[in-house]
Length: 612
Ligand SMILES: Cc1cc2nc3c(=O)[nH]c(=O)nc-3n(C[C@H](O)[C@H](O)[C@H](O)COP(=O)(O)OP(=O)(O)OC[C@H]3O[C@@H](n4cnc5c(N)ncnc54)[C@H](O)[C@@H]3O)c2cc1C
Image (cartoon, rainbow, N blue to C red; front, side, top):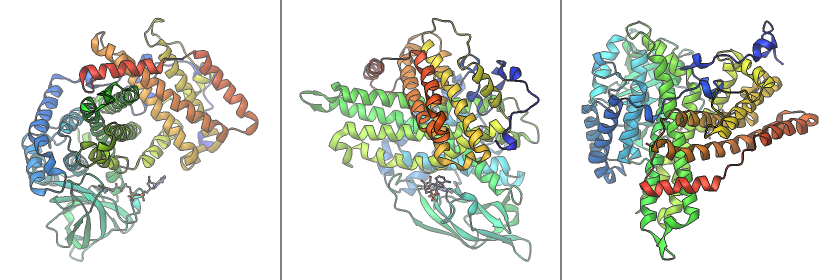
């Protein structure tokens, strides 16, 4: 075991094994990993405030009545219409949600910002959503967080109204996932008035429409961020890329050819570019979780409407059980994507609400809170993008041959969704973040993960405060056993690899998958459990049960894969026997088919996704 991962020796095993009060961890990134179910709450759609509901309704109204009727015209590049709609979104306040009031915005909480993109997604036009989200996220946030007073006044006021559009240019030909390997350079001119940038940035969303570009360049060896106006001499916009999907959004290469950027346009400090680049992406990730959840929801409706009309063997194809199976799983995935994304914004807002808005370091602290939720942001991004991908694939299958024909909507959904697993950090990079952050939070004791590891060794299924006849009592045991197994896997991995675990991708990927599955179970249960009794809760019952069933199966499969890989040959049998014994002791054998039948029946009653 490497030195820095040893157990703190001043703690006795007894201290480790005490079940602590962990509810005080609420609002900390990663708290779901250690907080037992009876000490854990999540924010969810059911908790929207009246004001948030109002934003949802206004956004949906604009999406359905203004954008959706013209979204056929946005299937290919249509700059004029895109900018017109963008400006109208600005007039309605949708572009200024994260911008402070003194610069023309509303500076609302992160959940409201997520709600706006969630309900705007009712336009069912991913191209427009990508345009808008790139502006409100990675375009605007770097200036909100790192800009000085003059920069905020100059840019944010115009960003809020939509008079100016922003873009964020990080990726280079030789620096994609390895973003800090960028080769773009900047040097101060002899007069000391301008930085001279040379290099290129590829695949830049909004690149040809934006007035302003946040970019990154090395000044000597210091990776630094700049705000580049499109009017800067030497700023050259390349041709539009021909893309697989989101064809109505602008994606170009930007060239800096001795590009003259005024010194006052350096963003943040010299050498702060890496932090600016990465911190801006976290917020983009959980918002992508929301927009992909919304996409997953609309895909269900689209497939259902088609299936209802389509007749084979003298009946609607909705009557075939194999299609019911698909629809049920589409509902469950959508539920999962929404659950983890709003759990993330809620936890971030909980912590931000405790900050003093008037303090000088307000934005620094806000951004630290968002960074602290890196693990949740990556989970939201993965769960959302995979849910939409699988729903889109099922959607094509439900359409049959029509799913392959461009005249019908399924093919476009299938092409448009593909980018979500690639940008905002590929899903592989996000898995590295999940595994790496779990390891880091354990080693640095940012969370009592190691305490819990030792506690769970003594008591792998601690008694919780739920009543014995809780309707999900089997699921409670499944989740708590899963937590013990997840912590056990981390413990074994730390013993084997120490900090090098972050470079052991064969082991890190299954560990990340386990964390993702576990988070979905924990957050899904918490969302359900906090609901008042009633119809909504009843409808969610089968969904949350099936979600736990399917995620537990994936988690078990990943453990089966990990144990033989990381344990000595002589102990693999015993370790697996002990794990299987604990699983068997649960006697957890839900009727998964009955659950899916009920979920589908409910879907057919509503004719659309029915959980918000
Ligand atoms: C339509 C579109 C819009 C975009 N918009 C923007 C934008 O606005 N601004 C911007 O800056 N960029 C943008 N991008 C770029 C996007 O963020 C990158 O394409 C993405 O980060 C991946 O980088 P890459 O293409 O160089 O792939 P690579 O980094 O070369 O990755 C190729 C494959 O290798 C895998 N891989 C790479 N490194 C690792 C690793 N360490 N471990 C495991 N697997 C790894 C990846 O997951 C991927 O599967 C956009 C891209 C597209 C297609």
